[in-house]
Image (cartoon, rainbow, N blue to C red; front, side, top):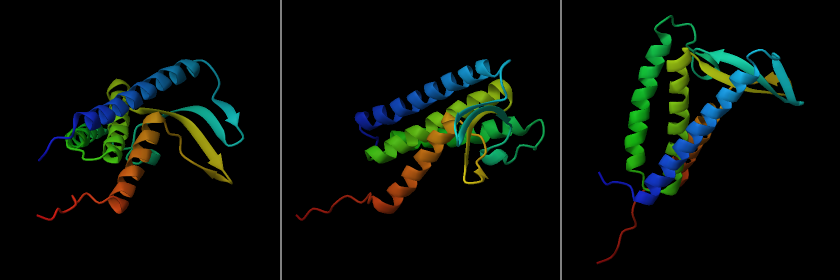
Length: 166
């Protein structure tokens, strides 16, 4: 397998680092804000800041899998992160590198929470037209955007190299 050009690696790893830093800073600020403060802060009519501990994964799934649950999730996420890092090292286009960087930065941000706290800090609370979305964080947002980009890339981007006539 070929290695990705250095510019693609820098793009992907730069995004991963940026997401990780933004995620961790936002969580430190939220933990400080809600340490002795309000239960929720209304920002817009459809958006609040809250403080929620999520011991599970997306939408709180697997949140009740016992004392070993966070460590099992750390192990699974770490394995997935290694696979994504290898893939990033072989990315062949900007969209793949960006997508993998977003996912990787978010995954590592949530791993850090699980190791430090046994759960992930969620704080973005959206509710629209009677639907209340489960709280999420910067890492979750990056993972979602990266996954959507990867899906779009797989549907619309051809990885086949053009054939040359000889």
